[in-house]
Length: 432
View 1 (cartoon, rainbow, N blue to C red):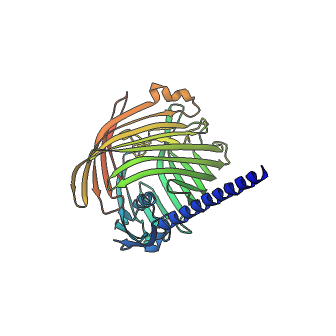
View 2: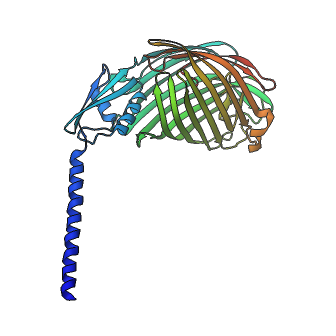
View 3: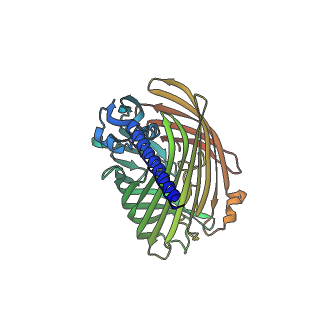
């Protein structure tokens, strides 16, 4: 029995060694058969620095060739303001591959000229310029001047890959002045509103789909009474220093093909604002934007945005959510109401009416519907018919495919609920 046992143990050990050797041999042989990237080159690059593009790619030289990773890299490049389109071609020999990435660059120095009306129907204008690929390094640098009866200006700097492929920085300064309405006790008054702010944000891209922004904003708010109703509970002057802590989380799974967008995106904004005055308490505010885009046929694009927002429910005329033409409901008017909560759905069908080389004429039909929670109100305000607004209409988009965000839009919205307004809305860029 002992002899048999020893023979059995030796046979068992031999089989085990043979299997182990076979597994190791297959692993090494399999590794040696993998196609690997020997070199990555770029074609079509004129202004953008190649090392900046190389830093952004997840695909690296000497790594295993992965077509899924490369496809995601092309989507990542197309999200850059500097790039309108990107694609790759891999040629392999003896498991060594050369990858050629071809890009089509946008023109990224964009002037801004905009005319609009104020709440008292006076004509206002805004001029500015933005460079969305400053020094060819994927840096945004811009500024604007606005006159609407008062002078306003702003400057901004944004470098998403300043420190590495994952870490960047944004700096913003704004001195904004406008005439704005405040609503209280079924009455309203117009105030001169001024906001002087300085903001610093850290930018972090965790991976292809997940991005974070977080930082602090120091700002001063001033309110000065101009005309309208007054109340002993509402000051005619207010001057207060505030601090705002900000967090933005973005899940981005959108794929761009010039004017067409396909996929899903979610963007969460959270803020905590501190102030010391008897009319405004510290408060929390958040809103979440859910986007869904679907290509329909060769020329159609269905676009949707659902925004849900809430803030601390103080009964104050300084409520943060506003009902406005340029933000949520096309045709409703300018700053027609305020609330401490908001639910808005924007849906539209975009269709390419004409396309020739760099120019696109796009038409759209849309419906915007929203509801608000009154300051100090209850969540049941959202289902109160008096707080629900619905607008529908048509619009046109004039698009230059070779210039970043070169979309001039005009929409006409008509109210479908009681006591509704109607009107045109102009702007630069898609509404959402």
